[in-house]
Image 1: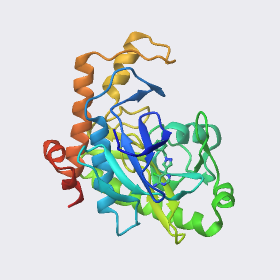
Image 2: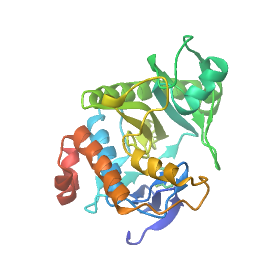
Image 3: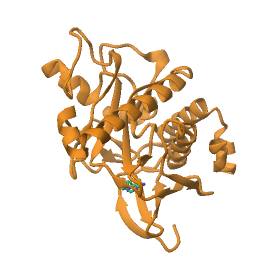
Length: 287
Ligand code: Q0Z
């Protein structure tokens, strides 16, 4: 537990503490959600994998955009970060048609005002990645918005910069991941402003919780794709006939072990660092 830190927020699987006026502590738990429900069984080291991966990407994207990371604690699951004034939009980039992007395209042929070619299927790769902002809904699901609405919320200049930086970050990470057998179908960035009103990347970025990771060797457009990390847990939950309302089912140990293995595999493939080396010294991801 963090010492002398005030709890300021809870996410489904993360906690946020204030260290002082300028710094926050972001702590990733081992909780897992599936079908939007947090399960009663934890996945050992999941929070460390996500923290390590986000820190890896923060270290490697500094020349694209400054970020909030100040330091990584020895527990491997806690990051000290600069407190920012967060923008009121989620900066989503999609390289493939999935989730609400596929739903909106099916209904209208467009996603957030982007007119897409006819004849695309579920999970099709897009001709080029698109920026599809969403509002941060206090409860329930974020709502896709068009560029005009997003620009009204943050101002035209910040909107343009957030779009350009988001596309650059996604382009870099998706290419890196694709060379290592992982498709990053889409991802969500959260930006804030520092005290000099500069745009800074915050929150967690390019993790399997903030993105859709798909195994490239199983990619087959025309339907939903297996999740790189959560598919064992989803398949097990589906096999029970659970109605997907809270509380979710306990996971058996083979599903826990298989799921943990997939998280560790994603970390090791992307960072090219042994997860045991990360546990021994988390700062290996920053070098
Ligand atoms: C992130 C969240 C979590 C609950 C606020 N650098 C920052 N400056 C200001 N605010 C935030 C950040 Cl990261 C910030 N969230 C999302 C994370 C638990 C909510 F771990 N909320």
